[in-house]
Image 1 (cartoon, rainbow, N blue to C red):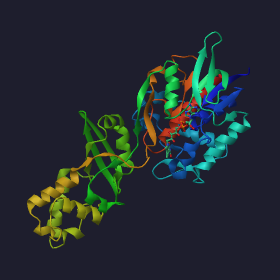
Image 2 (cartoon, rainbow, N blue to C red):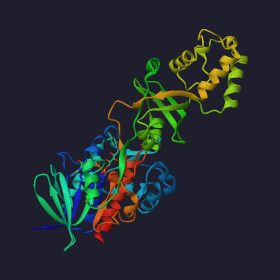
Image 3 (cartoon, rainbow, N blue to C red):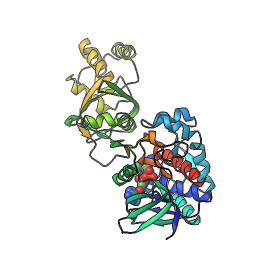
Image 4 (cartoon, helix red, strand yellow):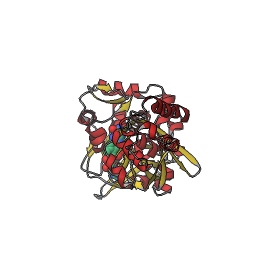
Length: 408
Ligand SMILES: Cc1cc2nc3c(=O)[nH]c(=O)nc-3n(C[C@H](O)[C@H](O)[C@H](O)COP(=O)(O)OP(=O)(O)OC[C@H]3O[C@@H](n4cnc5c(N)ncnc54)[C@H](O)[C@@H]3O)c2cc1C
């Protein structure tokens, strides 16, 4: 029976990156076993079909702040293969990348298919075998010769010298890792929107507010995020919410996604906002409060909603407001509160928090400390980043490191 040099379980971003890198460094007999009929499916649908390949933050020590889980370990891997290397890697293979204003990196074509085709064609040209509909159900180590036996649900089995598990957030991958002696940190969702059962808030759906500050206080911990927020017909979404969901992912899971969300709609402190409210009264006393917002970035719909929430008559002018009402407005703008009742209704969980425990894997080589010849890359590990290209960067980096190490 043929013995492979490398079997990669899972045909996603990190599985392809590792097999291509290994093949480019003279590893000969490689096969990717993919359970579904589709290769690189998440890459295809990612970034709204554009694929946010990475993020143009160049300093590794700052880059790692975008990973609520894994940052300490990642500093080592990003010092070897980071954003600049990803640019070079894809551009050498003919895919041009561009940086957008918010530092997210996409193919210049705005099509994820460019990335998918680049990975598929590179693998094909290097002679990597790829089989779909091959669900790996069991792996066994043959101790006499150090080989791995890989069993699929089609009742086939393969032998390989080195084995790489890149099964993303799929439960079967965790089971395979456990069967080879690894500890799994319980997988829970990350990067989701929040549901809020406030009927009146629904009238503000579609409203986007720039640069808000968010806070959740849970389990004696304070989770914070800052950025743009979107009011949806089910509650809240947008980059600041997704970031917060990621920071607090494990605590929110524990609390069954029932918690209080605090929103500071301004980027001002109390005295700055108080002065602004005072000025409005002095200089625009005869103007209707509805027509002049203390924070211009709040849309009129949201401002009217907040006044209604405070039970303030919005037919009043600025000079007609009582001081207690002005105080209430200041307070709600700085410290608005919502009861969140769950995660958003759609399957908007972009990544899994949890996975193979990081203490058991070398971040120089991605090799297991527990089982020699076994490697892990991508989301199957207990690493997850916020939105912005950080999750794929981890896939490229871990895939590249594993591919290099396997070739040594
Ligand atoms: C809708 C969406 C949009 C996203 N957009 C972005 C983005 O723009 N930028 C970004 O950085 N991140 C994005 N992400 C996150 C990113 O897609 C993932 O972090 C990344 O795809 C993980 O890659 P991976 O190689 O670890 O695993 P995956 O891409 O999940 O691949 C794992 C593969 O393994 C296969 N598999 C699982 N179990 C087995 C088994 N037992 N046997 C054989 N095969 C198996 C699966 O079928 C799958 O094909 C997005 C995620 C989603 C869901």
